[in-house]
Length: 422
Image 1: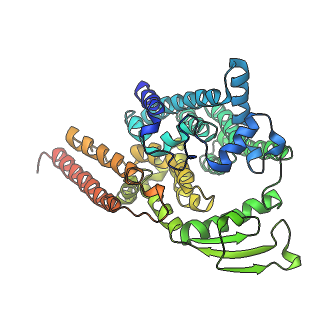
Image 2: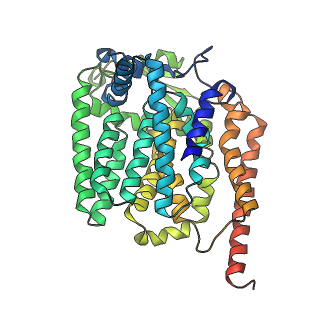
Image 3: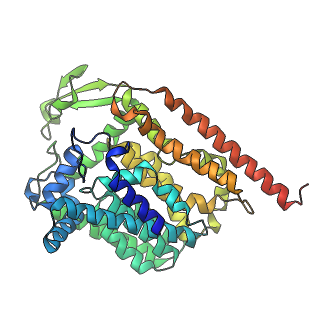
């Protein structure tokens, strides 16, 4: 969709004047923006320094390799090649999202509304990171499923897995839906992608450095879940001697020799109220006021057996990812955003009521509320300071209430129209 592509192009041109990527390095005004160790690891891979890259970044070899190939073949600087590839991913996402919405029976113009929010736009400016590339491939995957091109969808799913291993959950959910619907291509194809992706990731993992704790990869990934859950939801950070940059712990203990499996020798606890506040705000602003509509229209979930396979997968994958993302990493804003199929694909298609048509004024008001909720945290300066809780954030529940009231009024007017005004 041309309009969605133009939104991305405008943001790239005006990036220094928008409240996006507030955590970028001081004085950095050129694209692509860098984000701490994450961007540095991907840049190292794009430069061919894979042996210096830590796990689990070394498993995500595909996108940096494409950046390196684009730079070499096009004789471009790495940064220019990364932004070119990232913008191509943006255009693919815009087109596939609009086409998938149309295939699902939704309004394709909603793609412009969804893409004009901070979560996807932030990914556009972080050109060295594979997030937007994976999001675009996921949108293509759902579009192919909607059009009953299961084999091509499995091929796209494999490419997505090679770019980022978080595709694992989508593979598992896709296999489950495939078995329930007796679609062998979808069921066994997803399992084959899962196996192939894991094997490829394990092979490339050997080319780089071990993780920061020097733990076996499986144990490291398993321990990340409770660690991040405690940090993001309860504000309890488990400190260790390999994370001296976290600050001084309130309490600390020396690990017994039997428990010293990796590089950790001491652990401690740090308490803070900021991480839970950030997690809560991400959960209820990344997708505008859509979470309240999910709850408002929860009764329609009973019709799950009537939904097409692609809509079922988009719904259940997003429904699992949305709360699970709070335990997958420290960058909750990006991880919660992985639940986008629930809100951008399944939501507009599954939860529309029979005969429900918003009048132009109501539709414009709802779109405005959606964008305001998504942009308020950044515009208020909430992400800029650890002790900053701007009063402007109080407008978010007000916008939620106004949006819900507008939806209820639209439902009432639609019912009156259907019943002849009685």
